[in-house]
Image 1: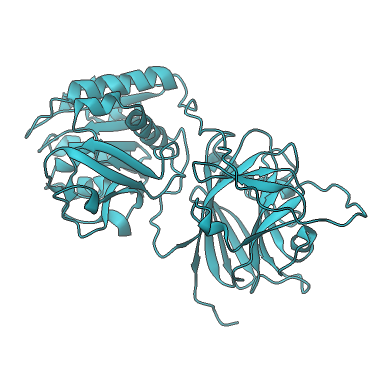
Image 2 (image 1 turned 90 degrees about the vertical axis):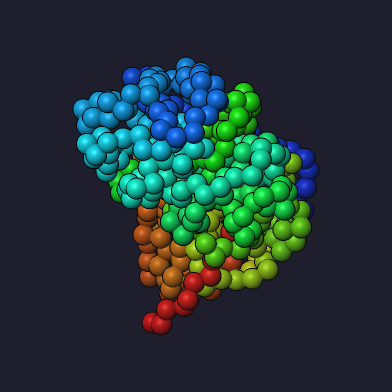
Length: 447
């Protein structure tokens, strides 16, 4: 939020515009520096997928486009401490069986613990069943699969670069794995299978098919897709794979902590906007992709359905360029957007302002840790995820899973213990998009 002078004229609430304007697509050009490399490893000691050559070629083509070099090998001798340090991430592309010996396993463990990246594709989950470290890294082991067939993929998290450009419902054909365990408690689930949409699913209705996690110092992304050669020619699947690689290399940031117990406040549908009200000028447009994009201002779209005390609020946001907006918390109900400014707190979105008024700051009160913020922040055109965690008078702010601010209210005229939340539309020159606003109410602590 900037600080333009208030006018003497009354601020008139504008109606929410439910048009079909879609925000700008997530950028896919961000990449590691040109000297960074990715290793594709496709050794098999069990079933061998005919699609491996197409998969290797696809990663090489993605690297050429996104700006990272790709080496491909089936030689397990590449797994030495010295050689692995050359790579920003290692892709296990439909590996099967026991592919590394003890020394090679130890070298790879050291690589991951030192901050290395792992990408598992399809049969990577059918690999190294007797190596507990690998089982934790991939997230879940393969159990069985029905025949190749179309299915509905429900994208749970579109804040991750692997899923940011996907629709909420992704219909595609592949060989759909069942897993021996459900990784939901340990990893951030990005996409699940709708078992009613195909025959043979056996995970009792909660069927993760893509996920990410931080693991013992490293980053791990897995996708169950990629059985067929045709997969690697699909633009959406290639985008999915590229996003996973970019996150694993550290070229893009995302919140990969496990997430359970949240309920949607805005899920991309018109119906979920019923309890939201526009205060002041300007509005938001609802795009076909389920994204709210600001227009005009200075106004505030606030959730009038309920006030909240202790909670974790999560949402995804994206700027088009040097744009200004914010998320307000802890304010009383009002048709005047300035009431939120005067009585609540704004978690700022504007990476170019002074420290106490920049992205991640509690606007005008406390700067974010700028070093952590800068490392966690994705650039304009790419999605970021906020978690705003309010407990008592304390608010903690996480950007893409990294805590960047910790502020405690001491102003007797304000209180975070009970208030509303809102999304700011700052002005005519500011284009900021939001989606997947969700909340988990927390136990109220005494004192």
